[in-house]
Amino acid sequence: MSVAVRGTASRRCAPPAAGSDFERVAPEEVGVDSAAVRRTIDELSTPMTASFRIYRHGCLIGETARDATTSVEPHQLFSMTKSVVGLAVGRAVTLGLISVDDPIGRYLPGLDDAHAAITVRQLLTQTSGLRFGWVNDLAGSTENSVGEAMSMPFVHPGGTFFEYAQTTVTTLTAVVGAAAGEDFQAFVSRELFEPVGIEPGTWTWWRDGAGNTQGYAWLQLRPRDMARLGTLTLAGGLWADRRLIDAGFVAEMDDGTEANA
Image (cartoon, rainbow, N blue to C red; front, side, top):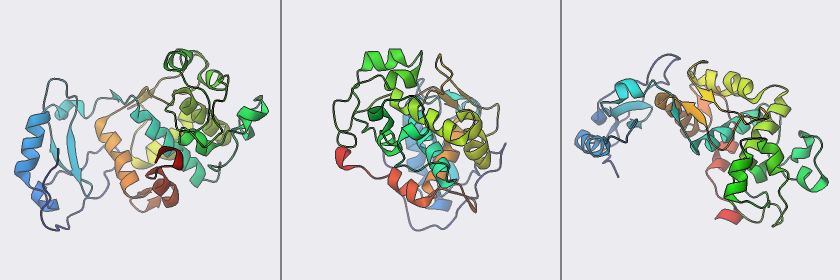
């Protein structure tokens, strides 16, 4: 559903501090028709809607009545978790810990030559070339996701074929943790979440049986904190005046690949 945007209103809101919500303003202050916002909220305020909020220029301009409570409750992000992993990789790249074209064998010991040659970029773009099967991939993710992914045979040359998979994304969390020399969740909390005001204790992230942070799903985050990550992305990796993620990396996140054009 589209929301009418009117004029070129210049109002912008500063990123919220930790413990605070986004500044609420009238839709017209940012050039949006308030009647359209109201219609949209009314239509999407269903019993199945946990949270629905509308932002523009960093300002909160509309929300459902339930958001008074649900916006401060962690909710399961399911596959949106993959995008958060992508941001974590971007932070590691910005810190100089890894490069997107590094082979993962540089960080994960004990792999055979073919699996060790898979690159970070190929895992990010779901072009590893590994065979993917929904049942095996998801079942294996409860035990050792990285071991499951690295046991899969190749069916395509790396970088040439897009296939949406799950355990390969968890492999990325293992790579980032190894590159940072610490647990992935500790890295994410300090280097990504806390700088944008996502406080420890307000989120949870499940692990597999081997202790790997699940990369394909199972991050539980408050809706207003998910908006913090969205704001960071829309700003090209900037939060206030702090560069958290390289602008080039964020731009590449928005581009397709030849394998998934």
